Image 1: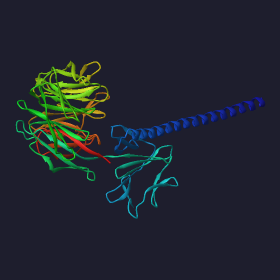
Image 2 (image 1 turned 30 degrees about the vertical axis):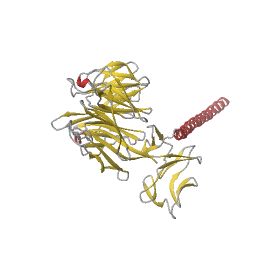
Image 3 (image 1 turned 180 degrees about the vertical axis):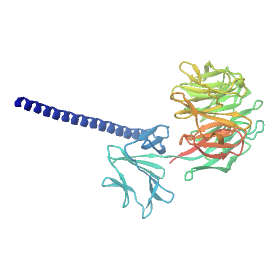
Image 4 (image 1 turned 45 degrees about the vertical axis):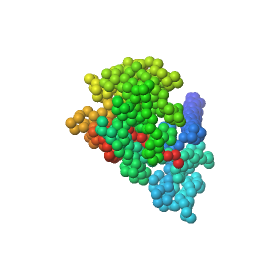
Length: 486
């Protein structure tokens, strides 16, 4: 009996040892898998930086996000670095090094100037230990911003240096009064230290022709669509964005009939212009010679490129119900899509879909938002009453004036992922007579102009109102941003 008891105790003891060994192996296996996954993420980060460098991208912003840093590149792509704390070292206005926005009181230049370096596994500035470890796999251990150049220091001793795209300012185009020939082009300087815009009176061009409608920066030039009158037609103005000075005016005709430019897009060396009588123009940016083709619709407005085609809204001034499809290579209309009445603006959501709105102005039906699938040519109505739209990375934004007595306005955002609709801002009471929308591609901030007024509302991506600016003329038609690669 004692022998049996002893053997049973021994078996139980050995079984417990086996369980401990198995548990230990499982724990080590899980830790190994976690380390492999971490190393894979770090390697992917490193490869993403090298790819961005190969593609000649620049850095537009670096912000805190999700326990790490979100890096945004000039093509709109983002890289999330979450391998522990990654210090961002910059040079402040006083010439000192700042680590994560805190002044180290260490000079960056001159006889007392120091450079970031790793000593005993920590980042140091001169004799100051920042307290930030430089450890891990091939990860980003610090980000150094010097003179507009961004250097990513890696834990394996290598580094990647990229240019930085800096915001200089913005142009605001205002329509003015119809038949008043008092449109305006105004420039606003951007101050990075105060994060504010200020109107530059020396580059404020008043009486900027009859009803300028759209503005576009493409390459080294800026293009302005000036509608003009039905009798004399309008033109596309080529502008030097560095000075605001006119380089050339390009009148557009179809046969002998003067045309009225409305909206602009650019693609592969050409600027495309929708024309109010029902046509589209292609302007070669080198020769600046326009080609024009007629459309079956009339009063053409919004224009967008998708795949190898242009999609152009034919509003019919309230009665039109088609979107023309124009083959880009042949530059001819290949068909139309029947849509709800009065389509005006159209944007590319970046997910294989086009969003367009139907306006209430000139129409018997309220404004609405719709989704077009170019592959099937099917249209889905979302029941969102917006008069103007713009596409961001994750949302399509829409705005409208809903009450004309006090200028009540609505400002919505529509998720591109699931088409859910929500209010964009809680500061909507500050907005009067909402009109046209624009997005700063460097910051993802959303700008809204005012109809029957000159206000320009600047919002953060989260809907917080940052500031309200004055254009100096009413009916803001377009906002574009001027930047420089350092």
